Amino acid sequence: MTQKEGFWHKLIKGEERENSVMNTIDLIILIVLAITIYTEVKRSYLLSLFDIVRVVIALILGGFGYWFGAILFNNLDIGIFLFLLFAFGSVLLLPKLFKIVPKQAESIFGRIIGGMIGFVLGTFICLGVILIVATVPSLRDDVDSSTLSQPILSLIPAIHYEADVLNLKMPSMGTTALKFDEEGNPVFSQTLLKQRVNFRRLEQSTCIECGAEVNFEGYKRRGGLLVSPLFVCPNCGRRSDGCQTYEGFHRIYGHCPIEIAEDSRLLDCGVWSNNRPVLPKGKCPVCGKSIDESKFKVQIFDF
Image 1 (tube, helix red, strand yellow):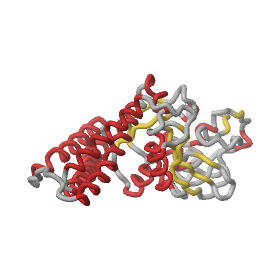
Image 2 (tube, helix red, strand yellow; image 1 turned 60 degrees about the horizontal axis):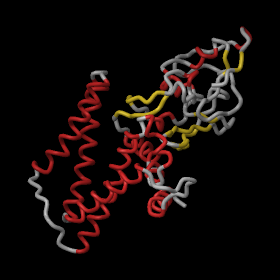
Image 3 (cartoon, one colour; image 1 turned 180 degrees about the vertical axis):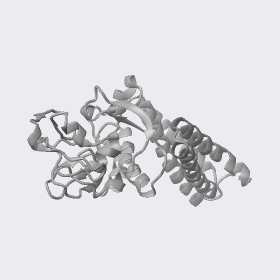
């Protein structure tokens, strides 16, 4: 079963779960889908297609605004503000700019197409709602136990991958550790709005165990909202979210893995554990640091 087939199958039939009783999140999803489908069925399919076009344009303009603030001026707050301003502004102004006036769908075909477009738009609106709701600790269990949210959440890895392909300069909200020692530990993880990392561009980064170039296997769900990139070394089989490569470690944590090892610690990934902590081998291709294994003893730390 392909990823797309799996999504439609789950969304239509519902994913089998231990708790099959619909909760508040399921009710919200049904209401949103009903509203968007009904709204687009009432309009002509051309106007429904225009809704998709203006959402795409809004994301592009929002991404440009974010790049202008966060990248050019190195200010994340300005970037987020400009992203919201450009995105919502374009959604509201485009219909007036092109003098688009809503009208009734004129045929059964138009209504069917409009309903399908409404379903797609509603699905992505629900995804946004779920991501926001899941940041509230008291509501996180409702998201996890929701039947309808699971197939919608299965879209997240594909969205991350396509964002990498397009190299979108957009803010990303995710649960992350601020230090390598805290990686994979939910106690220290924080939900932050930050500049996203294009992990696809870290393919062929250098494995800290054997020095080979790693493969990027895409983004994988780890349960709930947790989605992490997966890198695998074809030579030694080492897995990680990028932290077990020199380039990835620098990009994620802002310093070299050699610095961690110099504190007498062996390294392993806290997200995709290998159960074999290692000392970084060779010379770091980013900063040029290397480690002399004979100068000190190391202890194994479980991260």
